[in-house]
Image (cartoon, rainbow, N blue to C red; front, side):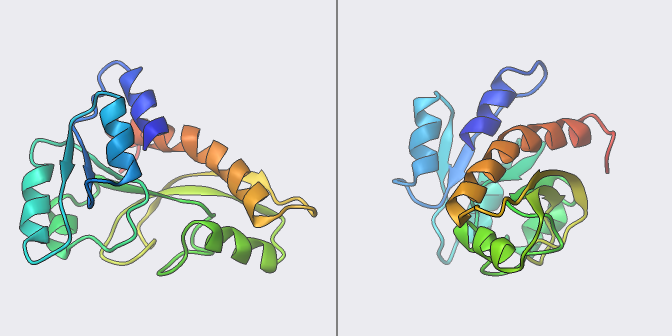
Length: 174
């Protein structure tokens, strides 16, 4: 989130409308406040769907970063092809429920893959199944630990997410 917000802040025509988190003490909320960004907390509960819809009003794009739940279908439908997510693997491999963070990199290494990377994709009602917008790749080295691979993939994610957002926002991908 921080890397994406920094790219957006430096780009003409782009503005971070707000950062939304599910807990007031979430690291992303704290980091966003340190960057001077507007934040909103929408806690999971009975009114989550409506509260999230209200919080999203006025936004052109939704960029998920570290959001590990499925979005309500009404949100996905309303924002069709305007919700992006980044995944730390080359989808369709190593995606789906439970495939996040270090678990992804452990699975990539266990499968003996020679390359990994990250994928920016549109969000649908299912985990990691939306159309791919952009993928960037890096090698999986024989001596890689999951943590070493995660570090290399994260560096890719930091530049890939904004590049993908620029593509879709300027209409070159839909």
